Image (cartoon, rainbow, N blue to C red; front, side, top):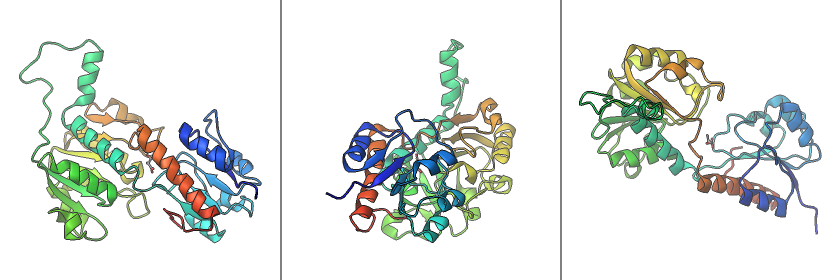
Length: 321
Ligand code: DGY
């Protein structure tokens, strides 16, 4: 029997995924779930054939240059792959796979949770109950805004954006979207396409950010674009933090230009801009988009499917480069 391929797994994964890795690979697992430094990852892949990283591990061009020649596959435990220098990987003949589709529903669910949580003041409400600061029910107390029937602008109408739209339709929301290309009518389902994001923003009582992090999308939601939103709009982000200019968003939340924001992702997370913590109209979650047991197991299995295909000489089910 040929030796099993060796793979470095940078984080602790769900048990079922680790069991499959241990069965089919010479798997270097991370039982303590300690965050590995760049040098530790480079040391860990010596004499290895593959790397299975998570979005918390940057895989830079410099690291890739120091990878052994025999390492030819990177299977990330994520749909996003901006943490990997895919150009450098390609140059070294390393294929990169990711985990699309399996986290679409979980992430879209969190987007709706953020929309409702931001619109209805869920953070503040929960704090009041926990702090035993709940006075009498008041006709004018803690008033949120209605989500039903409002207009939702979706920036990035890929798999997750479409799943957000599907859920929002159950709230009778009118969907507007901006995407690099217009969807076919069967996918659009009556949503209004805007070739320029700037044309969509004035129609967005709610704005959901669902585009990947790229050089073009970085800093998308800046002060100028926030100005284009209706007064009292609500912004939610389940994509990536760097799409938002934090200072501009915080200023708009403080001034009341925006009614609220719901955020699951942040630039520099977990070291988020500290000003968010004191903004009471921000509903903040710690990157929970894909955090269900079912989804995390499916992501791990998909990452291993990518490795299996690679070592069987077959096309990866989800190949990035
Ligand atoms: C991903 O897979 O890119 C997600 O952000 C993880 O939740």
